[in-house]
Image 1 (tube, rainbow, N blue to C red):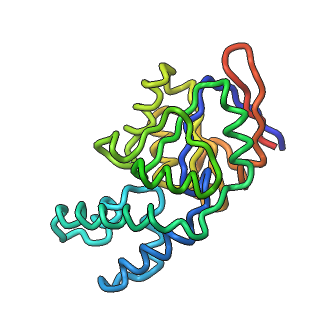
Image 2 (cartoon, rainbow, N blue to C red):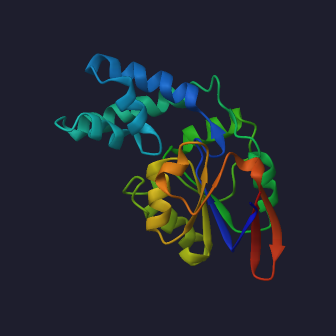
Image 3 (tube, rainbow, N blue to C red):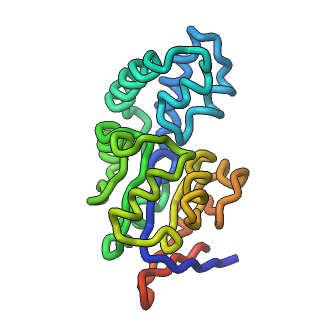
Length: 216
């Protein structure tokens, strides 16, 4: 069934939405978790969509958060240096190209170095506007990142469309008062506004006040 959504701005997550970094995320996070005796299922259920220090705090709730912040810096550096297996999500390049005439931004829990490394590894151009881990005080599922991007673009939240794959990201987009296109097989469980297998199902066309997304 074809669906159409009208908007004035698009806010796009990176990992799992524009780039498939599953291989490196799972490789590094499972290696981090092993000495702590955390089972792989818990790790993979927790880390997607969140900043690393928040994931650590959830999995090791009794630990001093200062330790999490230090280890997160190490994890980010390791992730930025390991892009083996990072690839484009189908349709990502075409969607970014189609959005060029319209307000849009990346809103990611990665820091600037990691975002730049992964987008480059996938052969994707980073949009001019981006909100990364350095720009917010609270990680997804807090809506701060999406609200900040909308304010920077000068677009009201209700006129923004979010593209997200993770539960934390979908919750953040909805909490910001935005409609959410859920990307990938795991997004359905988190009740996005609409759902796509990947970005090849999305097309963009000009509208009277913004653009229209057609979901096929």
